[in-house]
Image 1 (cartoon, rainbow, N blue to C red):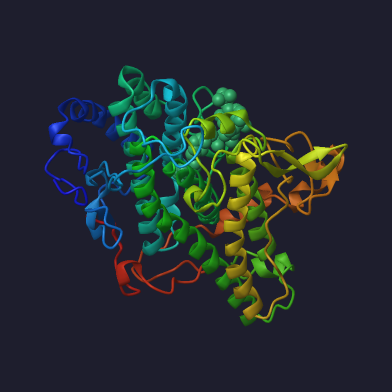
Image 2 (image 1 turned 90 degrees about the vertical axis):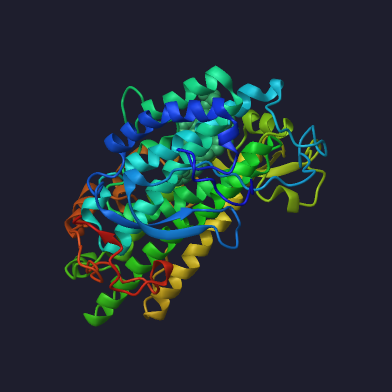
Length: 481
Ligand code: BYC
């Protein structure tokens, strides 16, 4: 079997030779009906009989791996795809640095590996649950299709983690796989594991922010897990990253298009001050200060996903060779970090200060720093659109101490600029920094669906190019079938 190509003859498409791995194939087939029930209960609401122009992976060759066609979502071929095995791959960091990568789970790291795989797996269906209502208010068929593409691929990422659990973790792996279908985003009794995945995604601006900021946490975490000494996890994450790029593209271009439309509308109406919220809103577009508030919310929720700045969990996972750093193999150091330090932002005597901490325990902070740098690229693009339109307004990332629920700053309040303030002050000012219910109501009032091919809601610009180079009036979703 050619590892590059995906075998579609088994019920579960795969490039891991499942047809000769009967036990795992049986376990996956046994899990399949529960997954389909979950998809029908918690996947996109409506549109299950619509034909959607989706890409499906037929190969894991980065030069050409997807083909596009119309498919009804429940008939999407969710499969198990691993990047090809690298010959003689060694563990690139930690105590086992330089030893051959593991093809089986090492007994002493079993619990830690399972925990990370379960957490990763848990986020995938969670995001689908969070986005399930959005189809009803899509601003175009193009956007509707992108939402569904993201949703089916997050579903596939769940399959990817379930494969690892079922193949490598025996009975407790199978139990964890079942639990992944049982928890629900936002459920009081059985919530998803990480904070941001229990929040609502109430409107399309939130969806774009989520795919920009929260999927980007996914990117950083997947990069770190792609370094893992446990080779099947590394290979799984490497291929997931190929798909993930499109999700962040949806976020980045989505926000660009909202900003673009707002600027055009302000210009056409002769509005000089982008902070004149009432005037801008009267044009039926989302004002820039409200976009900034949504950005503040989603960025700060996503920062929480990196865990505490100083973490023994992170140090243990690194030492064990289980979870590495972003682009570990390109970093020039000893890859063991026994004697080095890393500057960590901490609260010292009521002030935010940089303090050197052992680099091993500071790994979450380091990854978060890499993430912040990656996030900043979007600001440059969006601010270019604003300045080109002639407006003096800049979207910015808030300070990392702002609106935090995990880590060093969880017990204090800070302004987006990073000044610490007391509870009363926070209470008075927070609606200027985070979306208020009025902001939510206004955005919700714009969310009326547009379903004719080539049409776009008036609060968002059309994209520059179509998916798979399709023309502007392409019918990405055939709603009536
Ligand atoms: N919410 O030492 P600590 C994605 C818990 S997104 C709730 O501070 P650690 C995607 C933590 O579990 C990427 N609990 O942190 C994006 C621990 O609990 P226990 C998902 C939290 O462990 C969009 C305790 O606090 N993948 O793929 O070093 C769409 C102390 O933990 C949170 C991963 O995250 C939180 N935010 O790091 C679809 C990779 N943060 O064990 C998909 C796997 C921490 O003491 N996960 N806690 O009960 C990890 O690498 C780590 O578990 C974390 C936390 C980075 C999440």
